[in-house]
Amino acid sequence: MRNVGTVVRGIRTPIIKEGMDLASVVVDSIMAAKESEGFTVKDKDIIGITEAVVGIATSNYASVDAIGKDVKNKIKSEEIGIVFPILSRNRFSLILKGICRGVKKIYMQLSYPTDEVGNELFPRNLIYKTNLNPGIDVLNEEEYHKLFGNEVHPFTGINYVEFYKELIQNEGCEVEFIFSNQVDTILKYTKNVITCDIHTRAHSKEVLKNKGASVVLGLDDILNESVDGSGFNPKYGLLGSNKSTEERLKLFPKDGEEIILKVQSLMKEKTGKDVEVLVYGDGAFKDPVGGIWELADPVVAPFYTKGLEGTPNELKLKYLSDNKYDNLRGEELKKAIKEEIRNKDTNLKGTMTSQGTTPRRYTDLIGSLCDLTSGSGDKGTPVVYIQGYFDNLASD
Image (cartoon, rainbow, N blue to C red; front, top):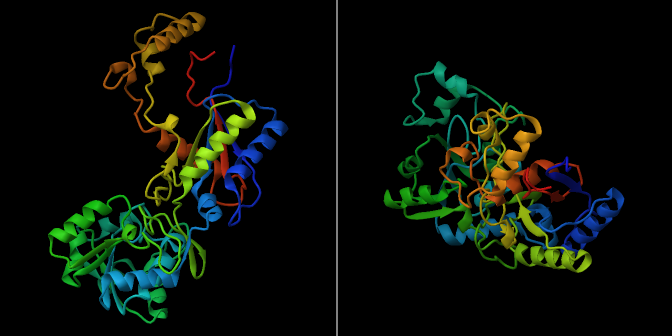
């Protein structure tokens, strides 16, 4: 009897550098792990490749100056409003530095008490010690400091108001801070806006345009094409970018399709098996202490092979055991449930037997599993190998 379900392995690879044949590195690393760990490649195994090494290998980088030039050409104004940036040195500091090089004054509107992905300007409970209504109340910098002092991020220890202020001023720009959760508040200060939210950007752009903004850009509209030979992303622009050096960003990958198909082809050639492959970024994990969502990338999986499309179609074993088969125990119960699984409908959506099995997309679920496995630090496993993901209790 089979006693193991899904197995997930972080695969160590050489340090990925620009210009490497990433597909070959991935496959060679998996084959080496297969030999050392003694596992066998099977059909429907899944290979995850972190977006970071795809961007690195394909040299998708851009300079801060390239950002500044693109902003200057698209804004055509010496002032700009920045709305809803996330609080992150890694994700936003170089973007902000680049924007500064395209204008002379910035009106920076921060949401409070947290940014879009849950980073805190100040602890949420402090709101209840004031008379503020976060849905409608607007604060200037003086009012903000009077109410909340010099609160810092619980993990980084950074006061992001001061951090962003110093960065802007060091670039020779003026800055005025506004604290508001209504995107159109910025239009009281300027009609030229870059809205920096990630997952709500389409709504923010629509509101700003309908409320009379002159120029509205999202981060996906900056570096969505090359500037003087720079890297770019035609779909996501600066969304999903990370700090590389003090003057250069690594952009979200744009050339992943060729890589995943090559990995799939090489694995077929070497093993005779049909595997699935995806490129993954941030998963969907919320830190239970800091309240931060790991969702700073525009999508979890920007590239994936066709076999990863769709959502799970699963029965809730607990429901079957507690209800339909309440009178059964042991092997008799397991046999009945296995038979139920083998004969389940192809679409269980809305049925009582599937309640509690949220039908999220495979790519989001698998990408999150990969992200939690590989981590973002020094594990050295930018490739994840998953077996048995599509199996169930009836898979012997």
